[in-house]
Length: 516
Image 1 (tube, rainbow, N blue to C red):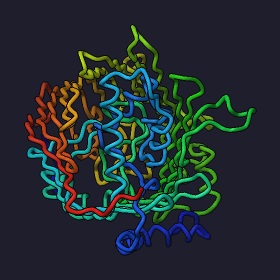
Image 2: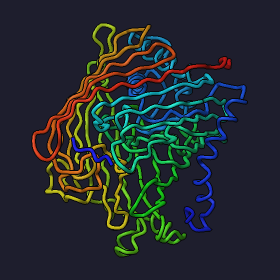
Image 3: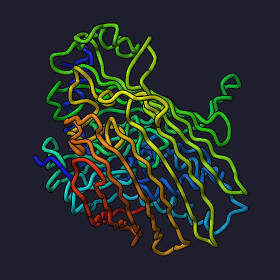
Image 4: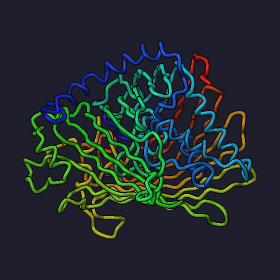
């Protein structure tokens, strides 16, 4: 396929944010010294970034079957404390062998997070096919990294240095700190600073609002450290809830250098089985732009088009999503959907992009079987053919001309704007308590970049293609591995056929004693 090779948050003025952004790298480097000298390794303050497909499958199995307390699998990163508290509330009786396997898989992941350790990561993607889905993949021919992580119940951190061989786009750095962060918990909140992959939405193969196909955005985030219901009798009807507030700065943006992002998400489960979420992704400020309080306030109010093309304070994507699970013959059937408004009208989102899907989970003997089918339409207002649609609108902007792409990679859905993708797949998870192996297969069909926008450097021309992926993952504790192959075949347009062998690993080389 054609892969291209090649001011303070608010001027105060918001100069505090500018200094914070510049100091992120220094903080992360300083984390190494903090981690080495710390002698408490419980790590409830640690963060789990997007990209671990196996962990997401296990959590969804347990939540959808009502075995553990509420954990949103539609909002990443997740504080380890959220997962720990959910496991504390798990059922102790009426479990089958598949349930026990899922609990132990999550428990072992958390136990590994309780260790101070250093290690190596590696990813291979031989034909440099783009990431399509939640599972982390190399954004080039190969990626290698070294990391050091540790912490305690109050603070935690990870310092990771990565090198990238033959990246997808010329905007990507060949060295980065993706996966690095510092976090702290106080007053029931989790504060984190660093460069972690986010994923906001219930989709299996992508999010219309914020996904992990593009380079992670460095910045500062704040969440609840527990996703519990309000104690007040007046607000308990909200049910378990959480939020994620993030302030960051895009890298390597040539149209508006040092553009900021102000991203907000809130989610809740008002009754068993139903999760509701709302998200806003705002690109604002930057060199040559109005970085004052008035501009910031207009961006938050959604008062953009009314300012005129040259005074439009922001590029914004806002929307809602849901995930509803009920029992069909005793097994969880999940329906989910997401709408994201690419434009603004009267202070409300408009020109919607749409995504919807279904999941079904059951057992065959002691083997877990998880099916899904999903569709995503990233053409504004088309909504799977209900309207004609508006090409060239989604993920683009007249002022922020790099659009909602980071280093030329989509910030939101991995196919980028003005496209459509259908996908379906199945995952088999046997009761393998030794290697925790699992097998997955999926098929995909898509039309990409119908507007022929060069800002989408992964799919720079209109094309139709179909493809598939076969993957196998396993553990040789404490190391984890994932291998597979991915195929893309052209059916129309300007795109090359692709066949990529993929492999990823995380190998801890040393660890300290567990804190009890």
